Image (cartoon, rainbow, N blue to C red; front, side, top):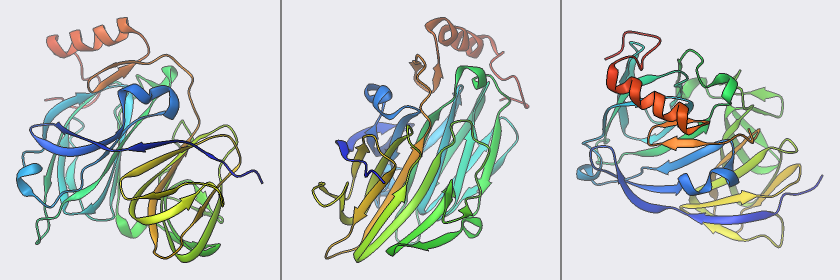
Length: 287
């Protein structure tokens, strides 16, 4: 097995989105080529209600999938497909916008005012950009937990670990989305499909990534890996918890305008014209 070496290290940068939500953008518009098929990762953990309560009022998406994973607090949501509900700690909302969705996401803190989690945007290939939208609500209890290697525990959201498949399946980019914890003195050597883009995002503790000579990464650090067929992680004096994400790159042109991602500027312009004239929603009741 060839261990993937760390190709680049990214630190989240603070920004404000929605109606005034303070978050850290780990990667985004300027890194689309490096993280293909993934477009953006936001870390929205906070213990200050004034930094998140105004949320993300009604807004559109087309051409992408948005994956929201909650750690603390809740997010109340609704969309133009008549879906509504609450994303709670440990839950995942995997939304395929496809031809077009209008939705809102309104966060609320727990009893201590804490709210947090992650939102990942994954691109859709040209052939699937205008597919019917679909929505998957994955409850925490349906996400399997697997013990592997030495002191490694994995929540399998998408992909397969040691023969156990996650509840999110049939995604065109064949993604893997794992929540991994490695205990002190523990070690993980996790296989990743050759040719797939792979990255980790550390959100608790610290660990060494990419083998014995790899860098030590701590909270709010993303590591993008090079070629190989496994990702290797070691925890030394403290546990480390991180997202491990991989997927098949699309290698297609990206035309990105705010919440809409297409392949050409003409397609992007058409999407915004449809927003203006009320023909954006192809499936569902709209708003």
